[in-house]
Image (cartoon, rainbow, N blue to C red; front, side):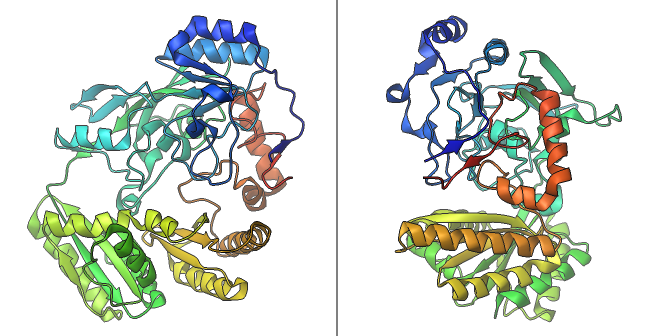
Length: 481
């Protein structure tokens, strides 16, 4: 059961419903738990459910503005939702109120090939955006694993993905946005301009704010010319520490791959079983998976040959080249199935989306192996070795609920403290949501949390936006009963 403290929000009544219907129309509003689909009671964080009192599908900026203005004046909480693919409870309406879905705001509004930008609504899916811009020989590099996520959701958590090692994360590709404040006022932050030194970067504060400051209603995204060629290297090692220790040497070579992923043999076997097809190699305990892109085959050959030699010098057992689209897609489709394969192998799982300096990845994974033995709990992992973002999964298997909650809580506490001691952070790309609030407080301390709350109150003085998350002045207890 979810419990809250220090909350004094208005419960929605018939008068409120009638007003909201007048704004969005009767076809775009659903009232009461019995009329709201189960999907809207949570996101991908298992065990976390809370229905909103009202679900609204916004169709344009004007509707968002009027809904927020009314909610702000009446102190009704608002939770914005995209596709609900988040993993930390960020899109759960902890305090009921209004859930504002941007799914129907899914238009690609403009492609500006002169300024290399695309303007979209927040409900556009990542895979739709990728297909559209690549059909015009352009490239949107951010590449989170969940391709069915909405761009608005990616902005909300500053999603990264595999290509961050070369190109950066979502924040690096947001040029501008239309943003609706909680009081209903519509603002423009940034634009198509490349440089901007005009005070605080408000768009950058919004990116990663997880719907706690207002609602993004339009986005201007930076594009690049589409690389003409790509290939991948699958590199087996005798063990993971040897593989991970190779990564800094690859980075120092200046032949930086687009992506540098690490994976363990047990995860590959799980993916093979899940997909029903063989991985190109499953005989080793650890692998690096590298992707290269460029505009000429000669450029790619120089880069991958240099990196291949480095890997062999550092202990690689072999270097397997995927230089056709079929081979490339086969490897990366298996990599894309890792999360679902792990999920299918257990009764329940929870994730630590930690980030540490690149040269600490091996030490951190070794530490998780020790925790696995100490707590007699399966712990699986894979992640972005090129930027230090690790995905560590705790697997419940046949544990009873009480044992699972106790062990998982202790293991998470130890893993995050270990990450902090290494100079790491609580989240590399999935955000904080509800699940990671306690660890965020440990990372930033009292003074840091005061800054978060100050930013929150500057945008949202009535604290109606996604309460119980970033910057909130009260807490919600997930495991209260």
